[in-house]
Length: 217
Image 1 (tube, rainbow, N blue to C red):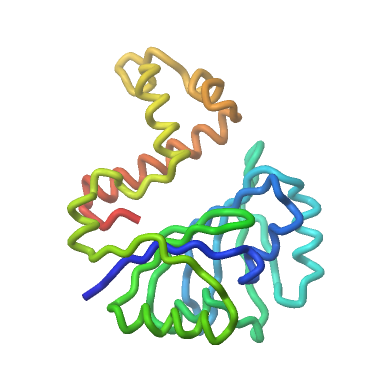
Image 2 (cartoon, helix red, strand yellow):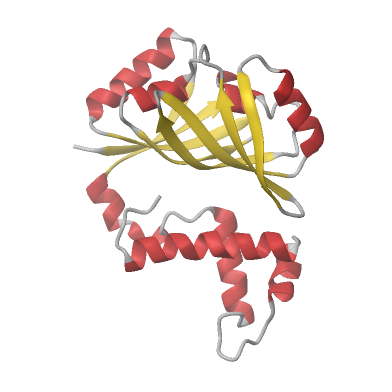
């Protein structure tokens, strides 16, 4: 039976987290994790902090083969990172177990929502973390049936939910509109580009869950 585990892990325990240790104001959110030729290639958004310094530090790390900027907004950057072949972390172990990272974000402490095929795979993950001194805290454990019964949260992050709530309360989705994207951005305290991207990603999740009836991720 597939299960979903919510765990927190310190940044120093894995390569991507280590990149943020010197940027306390930077928040990272994984966009997608794709297993390709036995490698795990994360796509992630970085918000806040000094992006130039972040990229320079990444280029100096032996664990990073390549860090590519895919898109830049006013206060956020979308990156793709390719790790060195000798990099082994709990992220690569997750891929080897056939598990899926549904959500991951953080800075000094990260929250991961992980889907395992069964309790045995979760146990294997826990054993690997214990053997390799990677401490983690199991916050919640769900079966897929329980997640379906709680589907009303649609897998939205707190920031995405806030953006939708503000946009709806201002009348941004009414016809005709009672508010502009600039109004929504002003309430959120971010740029119009960032507000538009946050709303787009939130609506994409809602469409996938409500219309396509996919699992909330």
